[in-house]
Figure 1 (spheres, rainbow, N blue to C red):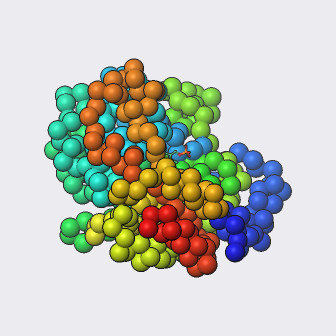
Figure 2 (cartoon, helix red, strand yellow):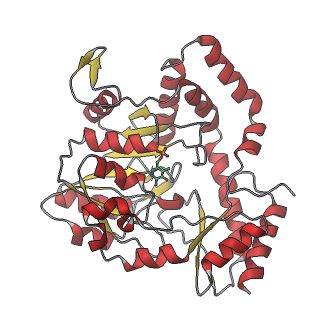
Length: 375
Ligand SMILES: *Cc1c(COP(=O)(O)O)cnc(C)c1O
């Protein structure tokens, strides 16, 4: 049996090695190391995949979020409503811009922002909602957009974990996550569902004026070279990464299918275990399983984590401390938020290896080790 890893990027690379190597060598030979046709081509292909008008590439998913908040003109003191049960980047960017993150609960089943909690958190200072498609499950975007419209709020989707996920509206319309709000942000960090071999990120919008602004901010606030209209930053998708991503994008749908297959194996194996709640998938979404995350009931979670490590089975706790309890947010009154569902989840979740290269023999081994601990 191949050694187990949370993500097996090496085996995935070996399957497409000739195409990737050629694409990288082509960039090396072109001597176009910044920008160039590879970046534009990838942005166009990514836009076509998402059926969105504009894709602005950038250096990573964290920058994507920051640039989105800057482009919407959010000002110091403005409030953004966001889950606390997320990766720190979602809210760190807000704090960096002196915005005030207002943390709300997540739904205990979908792990995504609790729609009912959003309305209660709206104040005259609220400017935006930042839902996160956590673990590859879509937040309930139709309801979020209704609230946003009623209160004149922007919606920035953190789609770093949700790329490729379909969201079905009640009238049957299907849209990719990241294309429903005013702006969608994603990451090409190597372990993400569309992972580069380094850092990368992208921003989506259907709004042409906003796209121009996003592009300008990502490029030192330039409207044309050496004419700087607004304060921006320097955030570029590396050309070699764009060439790699252009190849990998063609495989994204098959990668998602492979992840779902592994998830289905786990679902089936843990179906009758009272101590394990397997991931829920709402009818409105096509879960893309960036993570396969169990909720444990009356199991020593950290004990299981340590036991699995000893047996050669990696497992991870995403995330051991919710954002509102991170020291970083002490100054923002993080501890004043009372989020029992979030706290409850952070004590009980555990994520098992999930990726595109898992073999049945590996899945069987992982399942047997988990069961031997909990039974
Ligand atoms: C990975 C991730 C990010 C940040 O992406 P980077 O490319 O690492 O900067 C933001 N939000 C979420 C939910 C993520 O998982």
